[in-house]
Length: 189
Image 1 (cartoon, rainbow, N blue to C red):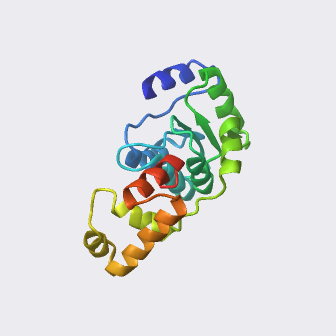
Image 2: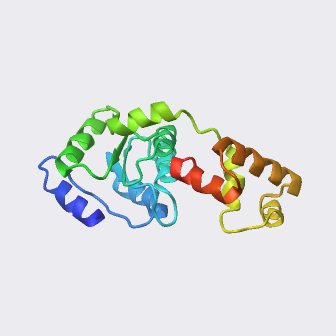
């Protein structure tokens, strides 16, 4: 998909693709080397997520505008992308011509957001989970026990249970597995 998009965007007379990377942890180095005006990022990447890479680009390559292009059109991801400094967020189901227009608009300083996703994000409201609740949920995602999470995060077991209980309540689920699934579906993690 990356190669096809690069090829199609490269056919635009005013767009030059200067780099392609296959892992999130290579994005910042490539941007520092090639100094692109716009970085087109996916969310789920090996190594570093596109959302984390967007935040690093904001800090290390502030002149590079970020446009997120993903199949994961979730309101929570949109909010997190904007918090990370992204200038745009599109879902991959649109024609490449619209993507080229979005790249040009982002380059001129506009913010470009998929309209249906923007409406969904407004109606969904903010992420109800605190940073620590997200951290504890993530730490338990591999089937780790409360004791494992406690040791990993340097928290007491009762504190871990409290954060998990709070996350379960806020997601309206019955257990931490369901809470984790719901939080991921909403794009909160």
